[in-house]
Length: 604
Image 1 (spheres, rainbow, N blue to C red):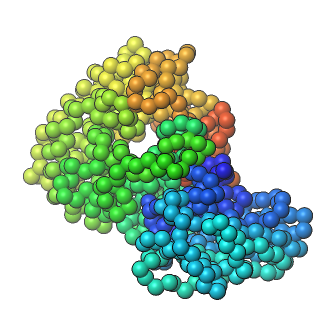
Image 2 (image 1 turned 90 degrees about the vertical axis):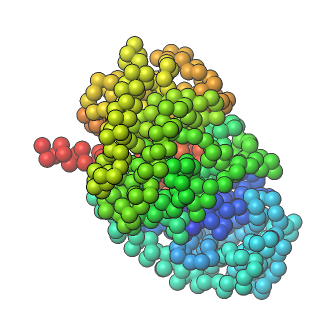
Image 3 (image 1 turned 90 degrees about the horizontal axis):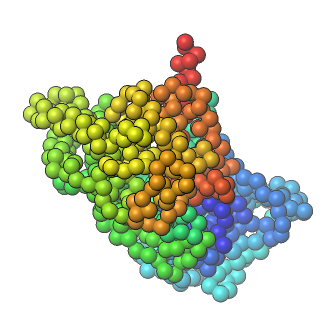
């Protein structure tokens, strides 16, 4: 059985990511890309679906940490007979993704066990295995793994095991390298040299960070995590390293997040730019431009890391799911949805890129802007599936209309910034004002003193916390303040914010429609929207209250500083895909906002 979500660490090489639990079991690894099939899939099933355990044979007390400013994981096990550390890492920048596991004896002697089960294609394919003298080769179809071991291996029941003792001062290295089965087998790299190169690579990258607030170490950890979720060959940032970790244990809200959403573009650019990572921001922007190539007005909401559009959703019935949360899905059917808000995020990202002087952003606008706005002219008045990718009826979501306003607003500003006299700026300005008036008339409920989830609704939605952040209304506008207070009243659980009500809630300010998202009710609180609440409290001047909210989110990081997508404040455990880019992006931006507010206060 998989560990708790918060019990996992990650290592990665900016091409793929592996998840390792406290016991030393690698339970998830997709190769050669982060969105490829998994060779280890025990996270969503059992040992028989693939894992690599390296741990003491008996009882042990375990602690773990990342080496400072790196993605090198050090797990220390102390037993009755001695102590040992396992160093797990991947070396960025290499053609063949490789897992390294170095075992160092610290004190006495510790009996160790290794249990290796490889199952390609998400636990469904047993590879053909051949001994090499110093390890194994494992092949199935196009995929192959080269496993190097310093110890004698034993094969049994389609698994590989080893038992050995590690003594004080002794060091041993295991490695596993993916390669195409059509190519030659790569030679194993020296583990010590690879470790030094990995430490140097990460520390050189961190040295570029310009964040100087009190929480630098924690912000850097979030930035490292975001870098790990970046596919370096294209610059794409995926939403998470996993698929189908549930938003409710035992539920069906299990989605594949190993793709890149256009919606993330604005937040990604902001987080990278405030931390000084202009190269990453430029690479993301260029990936985005390639992804929307063709007719830019007909883009999808998400793409794979190469910018491919076909993300057919499939259920893997041989996997029982995390804690029996089924179905397990790969692909994402929401890729075909109409989500109006993406126009706003796309144009906001473009404006941010131009203002920051990112390479290549301005030169593409001649092609991007006119067809994008021509399409928006045709569709902005239509209902959509909204930011949360509901699988129920389309509606006129207030947030979606606000982001359509953002698209027109940013288009006008881009045209002016780029001196584009050939564009219909007056028409765009008129439509922008029309949308603004419509939202204020139909998305506002004077009786409830709040903007509402969709036109005619009687409930709020956490996406309404974006209104002040995107400049739709000033933060001090009474309608913004009323909306923030309605979110606090109706959507807060244990001080955290739900995305929206998935079921009627007794005592809430407004009853929810159980059919709003077309799914069975129930999910955890959403960490990003909780950080949005903190941002809004800063904007309206409630700094102390904002800091309380931020500290609450900060307190649910795991021991390594990693966030999932959601959290269960009742059970006190993480939910959803892990680690989640949205949560880490929000953490960086809110920490930056609070640091700026503190500096301003000191300046006064």
